[in-house]
Image 1: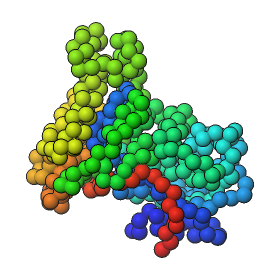
Image 2 (image 1 turned 90 degrees about the horizontal axis):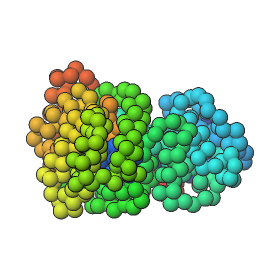
Image 3 (image 1 turned 30 degrees about the vertical axis):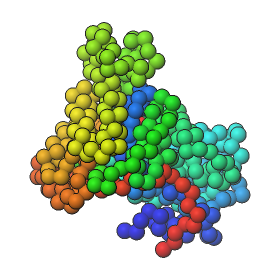
Length: 385
Ligand code: GLA
């Protein structure tokens, strides 16, 4: 199958007459370390991946978006009449247009667009953030508005929180918007400052999709977030970021068992993210891998966002030659794990892990070897096949 940029350009010319103005390329992301820390104002360490969403587009003279998707048919979104509706994927378009203030301040015109994606959907690789940021870039380009990646990420997050209803943090949108090629992004979710850390050449990051789709993600996710916020309030702090490792035992003494375990995950995970960033800086891949595996244990036992399939995948990865470490990644509750693997061993690693996992579970897993990539951009010339 051709890549998403080609499919998007082809879909555009099949659907609309005339030439497109431009295209937008927007990647997915995988988080190496730091899950369920972003909405607690903590640290995360994601990379953008070399799997993209592409929208090929052309400016219209009215205020309507005509968008066609390779999976979901077509939709018309009137910028002056934003209302919830079907299909579900178009909610991201309406949400971003709404968050950009299209109904009121955003003076841009509408556009014709065709979207295709190579970001696997529902695997925990942020296909929705990738799409949101892509839509935001098209809207801004058409309106002649320039904005920083951080500003765009905040808008895309608002679309997800306040229009779609998923109480996500900022990690996905900000990594999709601002990540850099060859680097991992250490992000402080309290002040949104970031440090782009070079990724050593000898490591490959392999996304291991368990073949299970995320279950109850939204409700379980929102419930975990609420527990963290209630725990912070009862500890008298603005967010769990303010609880240090030294404060932890005192904090645990005042909390019930379940909120206590959630807090312990967040506090120890923040420390692990900083240690993982140091391990990358000093090219210590064994240390990076051990920290990833510790993170998995914490997410499994304290945060309870792993699943039996994810645990099996991580266990198999960790006992296969070439693996430095592995963990559930992203929201969890199904989806994918990520493994840090010795680059020279990637091929045998992938085939052994997939074979052993298939045998153990009878599920159909997939592996994606990911290269740290640049954040979303308007692309000068859309590719046409
Ligand atoms: C989802 C959310 C992110 C983050 C992760 C867990 O991907 O969208 O904001 O909270 O889960 O780390």
